[in-house]
Image (cartoon, rainbow, N blue to C red; front, side, top):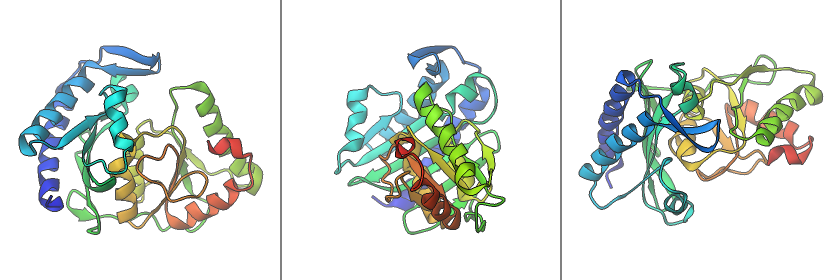
Amino acid sequence: MDYEAANKTLQDIAREAGAFMLGSDERESTDKTNVKDFVTVADIKSQNIIRGRLNAAFPGVAVLSEEDPEEARAQLFEPTFTGFVLDPIDGTYNFKRDMRESAISIGYIEGGRIKAGVIFDPYKNELFTVTEGKGAFRNGQPIHVSGQDGLAGASIATSNSYDDEPMVRNLNRHLAIYEQTGIMPWMVVPGSGVLLMANIACGRIDVYHHNGLKPWDNAVAFLLIREAGGKVLTLKGEEAAFTSATILGGTPAVVDALDEVFKKIDQTLLD
């Protein structure tokens, strides 16, 4: 696979799906696991646009989506998986409520490693692109994580969770930063993990801690942060694979500071 050539095709596909998002008001939804975890009609239509274009451009290559059955998505956790992984609309809750804070993510994985991908925010017309070893870009211009050098003044994000207990852990972990350091950082909870991580890569947010992530959230975004000069760990301080369920990622100095904080707190908050 020529990763950079493939990336150009992914950009065109993401823009096509983004144009559909902008023109769609198909927000009718069906619950998946609970009333906070749902899929809209537009999610499925965006998925079908992307999958159809990928199948045509890359015949015979696997394509897996957030909205596929669980048994199909399990292939993503196989160490030799090769194919595309996509999130047709990340931030579905935001999309359903017309909050204009959602994104499309399409990544290419080879032998269990993310090699290239795109994230598109159609509302801001911002296209984030990344290829392993080639840097990170927004609308063709290089991007870099922030130069924030410590917790004081840092912008620290977490995310909502579909389930109550993981969300409680997120909030308690955030409060533990203050309990351990006396610093209460600026908190950001925008509702699209993919877009949040793209904003870390271009320096708008300093760091992100969260549990309950999925491969289709992480695949492109983890590589984007790393190629933008950032660090992506698990909440327990290990190097994070794109299949990791937790993240402590962002500007290296702030990630390192939080890693030290998290070593001292209730370790059940890191699950």
